[in-house]
Image (cartoon, rainbow, N blue to C red; front, side, top):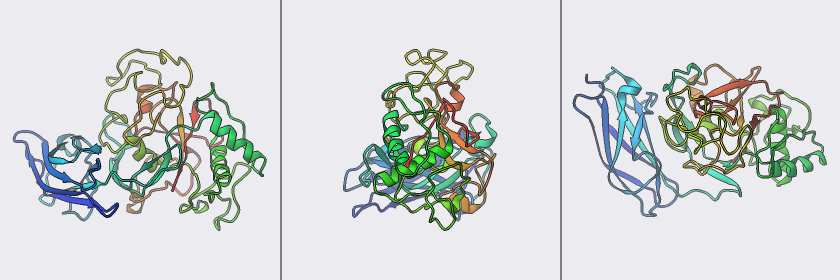
Length: 390
């Protein structure tokens, strides 16, 4: 069955004076299949590795909202320069049985040159990514949709015992009220942190380092959030501040994917104890290796950085501890068109979002698109967090 007609467009992002270039683009559907081959040449005078992203349109390029996640080959982060770079799009998996003459495919490249990251953080580049997945039928992870996110920095590691203690001690001596938390040992992430304390801690970290806090208790953004359990909304966040804050759902998922689309985990489609600290129940086709708790770390956390980083240099984006996100919970994270650029979630709600799975959770919890709802006042032994900043 013929499923689509494509015209490929090459684009590049100006990051410095020497932008990368995509040229000589060719696209064709393999006869008798639903696979689409995309070829292009990639050059850059700086010689940097590139971040290649693909989006698809059904309206001749007015919007790029078609699911386009089942991609393999020269796509994602770390793509080398050269001729005949090759991407395979499994359009049958993403858009089965469809065809429109106005179909377009957009390929973008982002230069590997990035602004210097603060200590302990990694830069997540700006640009679109495909949020959600339809691999395992999880309703609240669908539909797959294209989201534009500005560039930001994210902690490479879950907040550790040592970092938590240093900021918390300063905070409680400077007008804050933040609970102690708990941990397994030196070098392990802090846990039993509720959402309110994570947010207040971000403000304290900002002030401790001489940065502008992000969270306030009023819409005028004049009263810094320091004490109590305040139900903050989007108007109480100074989004342009240079201080620390929790990632939005969109920021977290983009960071976890590491520039790769259409995969369950930051590294691919299967998971084992060589890649993450989780409970392998053996009940999913994508689980491999030893079952039960992690054979080294047993029923508890592992030291941060115990497993390989993703392509953005982030550790433990799957397993170890669930991570608080900013957003109020909604059964669907897909909404009006304005939510497709730097979405910040619902304007109100009763629960907040957790992402990433943990040491006591099953493999399915560790999928980059998997999301659960949790009461903001709960401080659970399986929950931690990491922060982001501009």
